[in-house]
Image 1 (tube, rainbow, N blue to C red):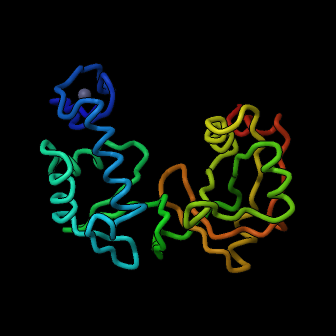
Image 2: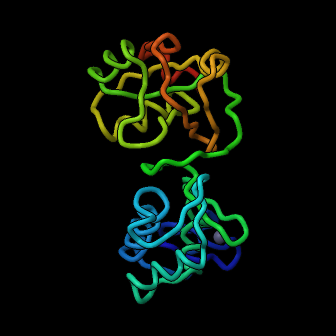
Length: 215
Ligand SMILES: [Zn+2]
């Protein structure tokens, strides 16, 4: 659900960080419907919806507004902007009259985000996946790029949505980038990467996953 706090603007969920209940802009069901349609438009099947996407993933925002309005009578361009501005995962960005997904594409795009500067990055996987990855490297499955986390703890947490007891793989990002693997910072937590050869990967022991944040 998207709400508006009179003091702090748009937010998701029941309460603003200040405690205000705010005013409902879009209920939970409609927020989900709009989110799915925007994700489909900007990450997966723009052409099926009649949208033109440039090589860097940008789509005309007004045209996207027309697409969502044609699917849902209540939806429009302003609600797309509200959806994007209230998204804590920073999934999308707007520049002038254009909008794009920052990551998560299954369509072929050539993204131009800032180069990653973190020497070490992390990837969470199930035990079987981890064994395989350490042999053959990390390759994108259904998406264009691999998603890496900035901390081991975050990688572990992300992987818990897919598997019970995740393993965390450490990526020697500095060495991989030196060797020509393209890695880009797309949000505070996420770096996207091309295929990473196994020589840059190592398993970190579970007792070290949470150590980074301990005093
Ligand atoms: Zn507030």
